[in-house]
Amino acid sequence: MKKLILTMMGLALFATSCSDDDSVSVPQNSNLDLNLSGLEDLGSDYVYEGWIIVDGLPVTTGRFSINATGTLSQTSFPILKSVLDAATTFVLTIEPAVGDDPAPSDVHVLAGDFSGTNGVLTLQHSAALGTDFTSSMGKYILATPTDSDMTNEDSGIWFLDNSGTSPVAGLTLPTLPAGWKYEGWAVVNGVPISTGTFLTPSGMDSSGIFSGASASPPFPGEDFLINAPAGVTFPISLLGKTVVISVEPSPDNSPAPFALKPLVHTVPVTASTHTVLTMNQNLGVVPTGTVSR
Image (cartoon, rainbow, N blue to C red; front, side):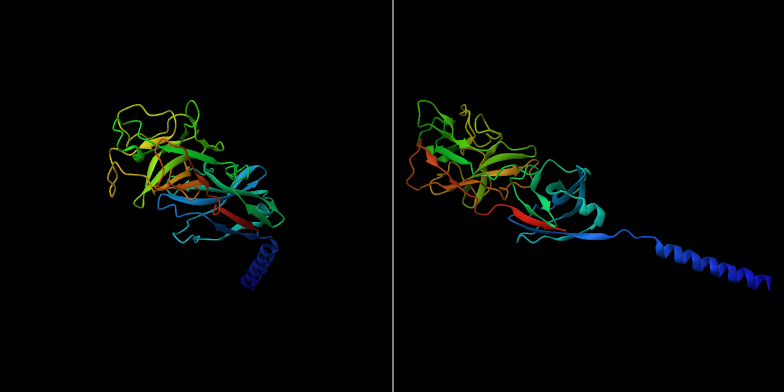
């Protein structure tokens, strides 16, 4: 009888315990959904990561990749509902795939504020690049000032304007936030060749590996004379070739131009060397997107 009573007491306690557990509220998740366009495959070394700003602090929403066709590896991310409901802003960054810091990197690509359950993601948001590049303008000349040979003047490009009494900067570009830099390119036989990275339109850029031994002008640019990459022979005429100014993440994910190319121009086949040429804005396809919760 004593054993039966103890067993019944144990069952009663078990039932009470179950009843108490059932009454405990379980935290609920909501989904954060992304719809992005105009972004590129970052390769194996970098990934995209989303963040929501809650009480002024970043909270990760998850990491994902984008393939060559622009398809996201994941578009919906479960987030604690109370945290997601309190979010004011969404920010998209580029992060190292391995050895990443738990905080956001400086490379903020897109951002947008929530208005109710939705948000529009843009480059010009203050938490992203802070500009839409509509003020961008570019001029350049063909010349090879680092070489005394005057027979290959169409094998160099310099982003300067020499139409006045003395050369001035040929590029008008907005100042970039930390995590970004500009880079010039000439596309030769389908191969994009960097003219160097820079932050301001005046002053020398980071390159010089293709130029000759003479002093370079104090502006971004490059002479394509030595150390030609595979598939290209220097000197090379840039007539009919494409010239690009891109906006690059720093650190960079690729030896090719990033998806954001605010200025592009095809050098006329009839262009004269040492004469100013004007670039075109290229803002028809830029990274953009929406976020919903």
